[in-house]
Image 1 (cartoon, rainbow, N blue to C red):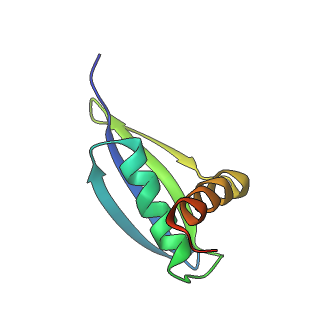
Image 2: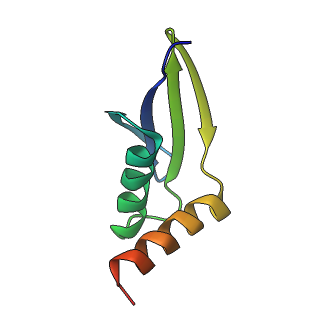
Length: 81
């Protein structure tokens, strides 16, 4: 089975697309998503997981709860509180 290539699609203000990656792992992509969310960007920015396997793209949204848990974990582990 072919390993996917991981990307992060960041849609600023849900208007302007920015593609980040490729990332070697899902965790590395998640770290970038957390970095974007913690950078003070607009909460309207869309963050989407893009996996490409065998030339076929599959895109899924980070849900609000999912990204919140990733951010919370990063904040707690980095001692921001």
